[in-house]
Length: 182
Length: 181
Picture 1: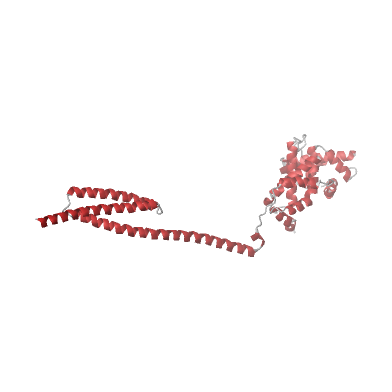
Picture 2: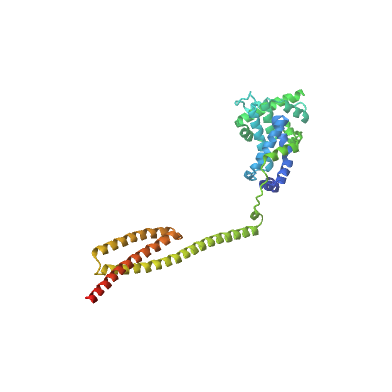
């Protein structure tokens, strides 16, 4: 069954590989909103997110021959968008990890100090994420919303796995604090 | 995973709150993409087309090879015929010249000086002939060289004929003298 998922939109992908503009547009239409939302969560600025999405689709269509169904087309495209968003932040000299990061935090210790969320509300969480510092916002987004694990996040952000873990726990702690104040 | 994380992970879709300006972004994407390629890999679509394409390629390759070998063979054949004709002419004149040279050499009535003069002149013409023959091998279609070769032979024959005429004349004179006597 997993194999079938990998071949989602295979027909469109194959036609797009051959340069069929209609198929490329159909793929674009299917994924553009998801990709735009990913980029918006990472960058927070409409124009920047549009630029990243645009570049990502152009790159994806130009390099579609390298796509070998090792993942779904969506995940492949999503990774392009994430990487481009990170590069965009780096170009703008916005730190992709928080400045007060420390590698020596022991994850268990952090978890034991976690505050309890008073009342769980999605809208408050959304607002809370938006008010998080850039580095925290990215790691929370990557882990909780985009669904990457710490190995993948370490690779995306160019940090160690332990940094990713400690950074995430700090970010989550901060987010809970913010949500509790809303 | 605590309840907080579970809540977010379980409601990921709710975080998709933005809508992209599709037409604007697509316009920019399209302008950055090359014009659609017209390459259609027909043989990928059907095995029959694959076979047909292979046969066409084979026929094409065979035709090209055949044309090439035929033209080379034809060209060589034509060259061989011309070469043969020229060889025949060459042999005919060579034999004629060498026969007449022999006559001159063996003629006891000719002065040694005259013989040597004649033979050295013949040698010069021989050398010229060898040069012309080399040139002719390089370019068989050069009419000037062929003409020069014919002239070379003509000169040699003319030279021999003149010499023989001289011999005959002197012979006649001598005969007449004897009659007078």
